Length: 200
Image 1 (tube, rainbow, N blue to C red):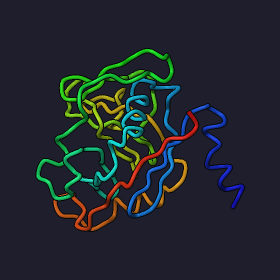
Image 2 (image 1 turned 135 degrees about the vertical axis):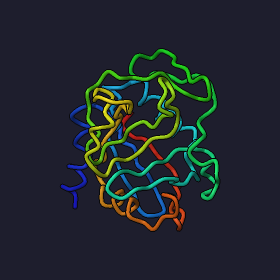
Image 3 (image 1 turned 30 degrees about the horizontal axis):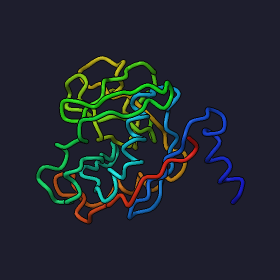
Image 4 (image 1 turned 90 degrees about the vertical axis):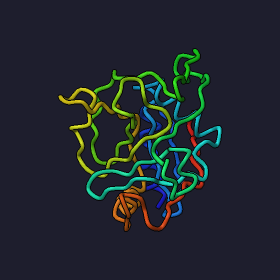
C-alpha cells in the first residue's frame, strides 16, 4: 500500500507541482495540477479551491466515453436549469509561479493560456469555455477518453487547454461518467464535498 501511495504522488516530487484531492460522493480522485506549465490557469483553479468555491457543487454534465463536466456555481442545485452557465465572481488572484496578480473579468473569466501542448488524453483536466476566446472561468472537465480534437492546438473551433492529470482514482472518474443520466445530468446527484490542494 505504501508503495502505491508513493507512486501516486511521484508527479509532485518530480515536477514540484501541487496535488488536488477531489472528495466526491462517489469517491476520491487525486490529480497533479500543472502549475509549471499553465500557471495562470492552475493558479486560478487553486485559488477557487482554497476559497471553498467548489464545495457543494454537483457534476452537471457527464457522458460515457467522453468526459465529466463540473464547476458551475448554479449546480449547487443539481437540477438547476442554469447549471453549466455560471462562473466565479470577477476579481484578482495570485499567480503562484510568478508572484504577480492576475484577474478574472467579464463574468469571472481568466485569459486563455494556450502555451503548453498537452493533449486532452484520458485522465486529463481541461478548461471548459463558451467557445469564445478568454471565456474560461471555474468550469472544467475530466476526460475519460482520448479527446485530442479538443486540443487548443488542433484544427477546428474547440480550444480547451489542459491544466492537470489524474494520478489516482481514474476508476472513480470513469464510474462517474457511466451513471444514469437525463439530458446528460446525473439522475442521482454527484456532489463535490471539497477540493484540497497540497504541495504548494
